[in-house]
Length: 238
Length: 250
View (cartoon, each protein chain N blue to C red):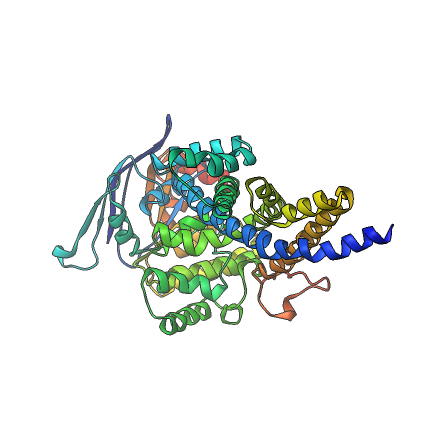
């Protein structure tokens, strides 16, 4: 490797990393927040089988899952101004990624809620809980645990998909790599460097996932109730 | 105290309940027996409004005061009415249905804190008392997955009792348990009976029904074929269908 290339890679590293931290990560976090809230609402509408709203949710998911993300991004950023709606690049990206992923997360939430045995809801009713109380206190916490790995999977996909924002002028991680590659004529090295930084980010997310999953277990703190393998022992009799 | 009359329920083309009439007096322990598919569980689920009956009337009388009689149309009852009638009932499921995201204590407290809006310390005190009553005081902080089936069912009984219901409904409470664990659950129910708790118990445990129930209902094909004192039903049944069922049950 020539000295020049090493020099380019070293000086460009922070120039790619900083937009990654300052733009890619906030873009990912905000979009994911939008997709969680909207996805959960869509799932609740589907599960509660609310007439009209249910149809709207169904159509929403059909459209956003059935069309390419980059097309949705272009419609929001380049298309909407034609209708008099101007949205800046960053919020446009948050909107596009959030709306798109909401459709996927809605399906994750819906199937997780469906996976909770109806007996949980019935038991909640019989101790005097209303539907919203039973949903928020009993069903959703359990459903969230089931949904968690899939949601995190979607989060990691989203992190990488935010590179599409480079096509609507958002200066994020990949945009910075593109600019430097164009200036230095070293596309192979620069894009590999960008890939490496994405890989570091998603590796951190993967660690975060395993750590959070280990926290999502309903277990008493009684060590005497453990087997040698650290699993909970089911108790027989008293 | 609780009267159900002319209860009908169909699933699709099959008529599961074909006009059920039951009258339950305060302090009575009633066992419901009958072959699988006879409608025992469906009846219990209609009484607790977990299934919507096609038709039927329910009357609840808390005391002698006629003004306080509550009547319900079992098909048209509103969600508010359903919540009101359920206040009188405790329900114990075949598959326990403990809240998986709550400890034993949390399971018992849930109805008190969220349903009845009781403050937490008071709810906890009642809940610990109820767990002690079913012999599980030291299991208060365990999650359902860490308890045996028999223990889970006893927590479920404590959860229902904590709300101080007028009547306890049991839907085959021991069917999911092996004989050893069945015994501990039946002992708990037996103790409640001795304290005068009003109970309607759907069961396959004939010996238990004979020993604990004050009255036995025999159901088949969606109707109550025969009812009476255990000695009468088990030793001198009047109906041929009852005799046939008991012969097979032995």
